[in-house]
Amino acid sequence: MDRLKIIGGNKLNGEIAISGAKNSALKLMAACLLTGEPLTLTNMPNLADTRFLSQLLATLGVEVYWPKGDNECRLNAAELTSTIAPYEQVRKMRASFNVLGPMLARYGHATVSLPGGCAIGARPVDLHLKALEAMGADLLVEGGYVKAAAIHGLKGARISFPFVTVGATEHAMLAATLAKGTTVLENAAREPEMVDLADCLNKMGAKISGAGTDTITIEGVAQLNGATHAVMADRIEAGTYAMAAAAAGGDVTLTGAPVAALGAMISALKESGVTVDSNEAAATLRIQRNGSALKAVSVTTQPHPGFPTDLQAQFMALMSVADGTSIIRENIFENRFMHAPELSRLGADIQVRGKEAVVQGVPKLKGAPVMATDLRASVSLVIAGLAAEGETEVNRIYHLDRGFERLEDKLTGCGADIRRLNDSEE
Ligand code: UD1
Image (cartoon, rainbow, N blue to C red; front, top):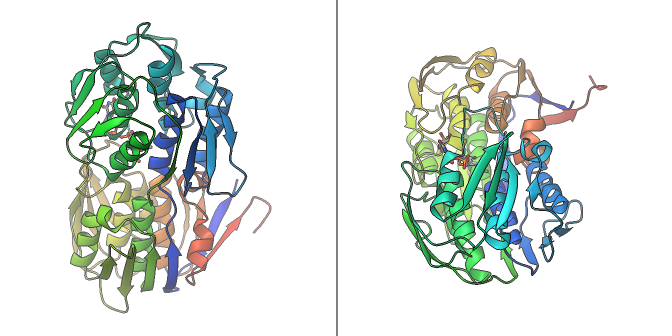
């Protein structure tokens, strides 16, 4: 199993190019199932998760053309050979569940295993299923699988989500494109990825309006066509490197950054005393901290445009070395503080009390061996390792490879001392 060895203390200086967004790419890939024509996605991030979904799509009969290392991927679902997504594949990544709605909408039937995914709470899919049922699907949950049928096709419906869910909003949006009549999604997620998905689907011939607001309207169409779409830039990757630069100190410019999508993160960084220069037109975000102390800032995770839960662990790493006490409240997932005890191994002072973590900043972290527990938690350990004195070894980094493209290259390019080791290396 690979691990990362980090010698902390180097300041970060230089440029980091932001990759395409994992979370957006996964839903855009599922959109290929809605049409018999090719969908070409550019700015695709080469990640374990996106590669993994391409394998699942291939199992279903999608022709996948995506050379190794390439950022362009062509998906052609002209003829599916199966509408069954097996447990062995879906359990490894929760977002694979989103193949259900598109297959159901196009073929009138689909069987998809219930998902697994990150260990950050129960993460049920009840609201995905309720949305599909509201559109007329007959569902049977049996033996760990959802068997769905809509013999006469899906129909438009008014769906009001009891709370904001990214995955169910996207799933309903995908399925509703081919439903008969109009679907209205109320209390919809407003994450930038909704806009990216709606843009792509509209290029494919869908009629979606309101994406990015809490009410999304989808007028169903009889069929969709192929399209070419560039995956939006990854706001979580951008936020992660911004915090790495803030924690280690230095002067880093993020290029191709989705500046408008990062408002809450930028405000929190500025409040903590970091210099942030953003240029939306040029898609750049410059982060500078040279010698100045960090101030403790409290944040609460919220659906967009609030502070994203996917940046909570990274912000906790940063606050570990701030002056004062920061309270970090996690409102989206119930079990998302697994990084706290690992950060404590580096000398951080963190007390978890239910939904809140109380972080008492310390002047210095000290390197130690730590273990990655989920995707965003693992990168928080990298950030802490970069800021710590001495050597940090991050184990189980397969979590990192799920969501960060060429992480070591991007960081070493800015002067970090970080190396990937496998079992045989010391
Ligand atoms: C997506 C993101 C993830 C991010 C999260 C919140 C992807 C691949 N993942 O996850 O990185 O952290 O949004 O921004 O895009 N819930 C239910 N029933 C459901 C669906 C969700 O109870 O049917 C709950 C979840 O357990 C969670 C909350 O709703 O507590 C929000 O989850 P959701 O927004 O759906 O997250 P994901 O789509 O899984």
